[in-house]
Image (cartoon, one colour):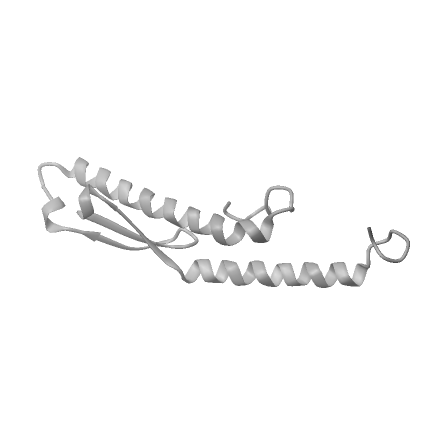
Length: 112
């Protein structure tokens, strides 16, 4: 029920929308600065991505490098990056989910 005969207070709604926009912007900034790791091959390959999914580091142990078998190394790299991206997506959901509930399934343009 809205005070004043059933009409929403437009000023209050605008203020609420502005706060939500600020909260979303802050959460996006925090995700861009956060870093999560993924690994494959028992730690032979490790990938680091930001909370928004940008690959920022890749570490390959010398034991993972076999000039005769570059396909396995490529698979390990892909697996490590996927693992890190899954961790980033989980972080996005945890951080952004509460901010976007009730918005019809999210906001277009956001990565979740």
